[in-house]
Length: 356
Image 1 (spheres, rainbow, N blue to C red):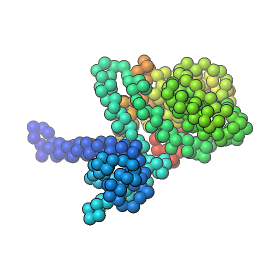
Image 2 (image 1 turned 45 degrees about the vertical axis):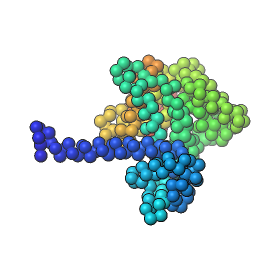
Image 3 (image 1 turned 120 degrees about the vertical axis):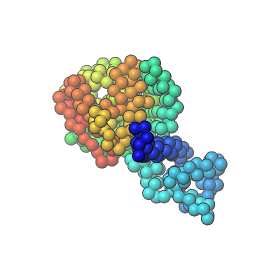
Image 4 (image 1 turned 90 degrees about the vertical axis):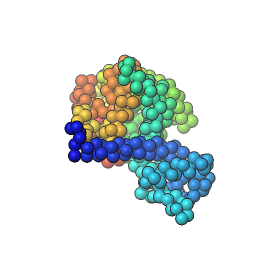
């Protein structure tokens, strides 16, 4: 049926979809709270319980827990028994919502939804006036990214990621020089420095806050083969220094990614290897329509990765710069050979192994 040229069935179908958007967006916020307060972790470990019992187990205020539980039940995240007034997190849901879920933990990423909401006003201003929002406007960014890195990079690093480079683990045992660009709080380099004491590790990041945390951790761990330093990768000026350079989810939000990649090529020894992890997507947005996380990733791009680059007068590649653009920039920087891999544990990323 149509009225005034409008297909009413399509209107109703889209209204249903938008209702779903509102509900699922709200559930994302509640999931973020459930994750940050460890309610999911607590409920995964206890039998069906009342709101008071759950609040006590989690060390939280019951009234807030009770309202959160209601949202989770009507959102079909939790089960509820009205006769016993008890709530339960199904094991099948816990497998995707708790810290014990490891790389399958999707609740971790709901924190981005609430975090990005904090800077919406600043992003709206950029739509009108241009420019960008700097890293300093994101108070929990490094905290969330460090947790993400711990699950998707640090945990599988030695057994799954390093073997992408033949012979690399043997060389690390023997002793080589390694640099990590955009290291954040440095979890990956700390893991490697512990595992390979004969090698030397260096982590650089633009963020003073992240480097301060990394330095304190390294000192506490007694890692004398590891050094962290505040440094802009676009200003890196070293030649033939490193056997291995890594960049984990760090290039697409650089202000000057082309310069950073050229600096990496120059800093590598002639037989050195560059290992880059970055988002698995096409550079052509219409090819990403069937990507299971495309709306989420383009939102992350608009509200973080693209804008932090533009905030410093940069290129603004964005999260979804894609494989085609990545290969183009790697070749322009001076890499003559690049292999692209995808690993079963990581649905988000490609792994690029490049040599001069």
